[in-house]
Length: 314
Image (cartoon, rainbow, N blue to C red):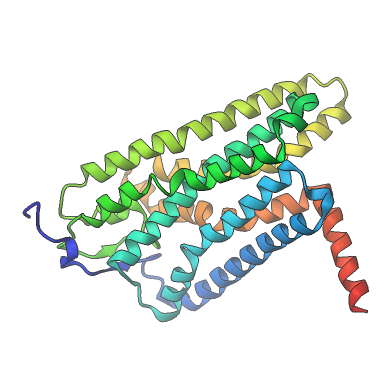
């Protein structure tokens, strides 16, 4: 194909989803609808509790509120379309709809990486530098860091958006995935894809690797600091303040590594969709459960809010 040929020879794609499972589509639609509603309501509850309870007006919960908002946006880029595909049996998605879905998915994933890094550094300061914590993590610093997280991925990924929009698609338009991830999309392009692959690799190297290293280093120092605490009770109390975040970080980066870093051989490719479900759908669902069920302050705030609501009602 000539380099200047217009890519709009393909005006829409077909999301294959989970393959030939039409007999389970109604069941899957209810399952993913339940997950979506649970995720959005759970994270909205977290945001509401943080806003309305003065005891939760701390840097840790400020960043947790941002994470809850991020998870709502993150899951909303994929699941509503997936439910529609299951209900209608029509996996069609427009050319620009596919490109834009990937853009928001990738930008929000980059935002989550930086936000998790900021949250881990916050726990490092709280545990390793408690005397200076109030000064180092004042409200201005928190707002600047949160804004930096939200702005980290969106402007840069416009480059990938532009390059993807210029790819020619003149053959099959069937995407072997349940959403428009980069690898399945460019695999059906009939043009040169090196530029968009290099751009995304460069962006991942600058937006994902540094936050991951900051997170890993922060927890290395946290674990060393906790191990130096003489009493078992003290160690348990110190580590409990960051254990929930460590679980979330492990799940997020673990599933990302399985999908994007393992060799692309046919045997592993069959499991990519399953692991993709974990970091795109399951993780946003589990996050509010982990933070609420493992956090005493949150459970106290939730209990007080429920009691207040019951008292006002009756």
